[in-house]
Image (tube, rainbow, N blue to C red; front, side, top):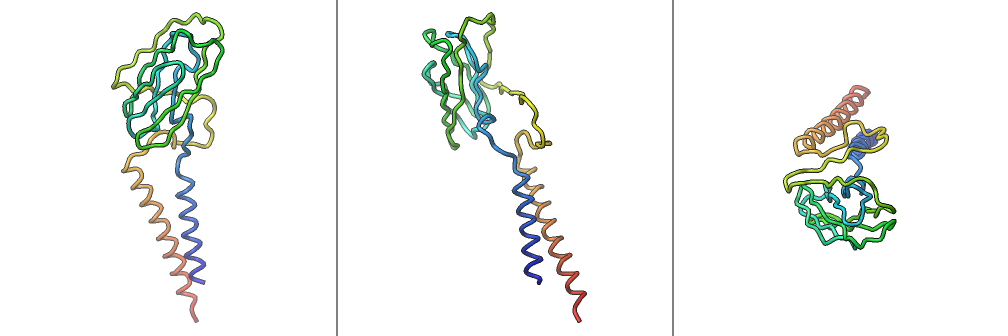
Length: 173
C-alpha cells in the first residue's frame, strides 16, 4: 500500500511540474515588424526565443544577422511583388530554426515611417488578442525562479510522502 501512495505523490508532483512550464510558440520566437510593408520599406527582425545570435533570410532582402537579445533592420527590395507573402527563415545559433511571414503591401500605403533600431535595443512585441490562462507565465525565467519552483515542487512531494507514511504507520495493529 505504501508504494501506491508514494507513486501517486510522485505522479502528482511530476504533473504539477509539467503544467507549470510555459508553452513555447513559434510566434514568440521570431518577429518581423511590421508584417506588411511596401517595396523598399524597412522591417525590424528579432528572435527573442534564440539563446544566441540568429540569422534571418528571405527572397526580398539580404541575409541579416540578429545579435543575441537584440534586433536588426532589413530593407525590402524595390522589386518585391506587391500582394505576395514571403517566408522569412530564421536560424538560431544553439537553437532550432523557424520562420515568420512578411507580406508586401498590395497597394502603396500612406505610411512613410521608418523603424529605427540600434544594436543594443530590444524590440518588445505586445501580445495580440486574449491570453487566457497564462497568468504570470508570459516572459522569461531566470535561474533563481527555476530553482525556487523546483524547490517548491520537491518540498510538496516530500511533504506528501511524509504524510502518507505517517498516516499508515499509526494504523498498524
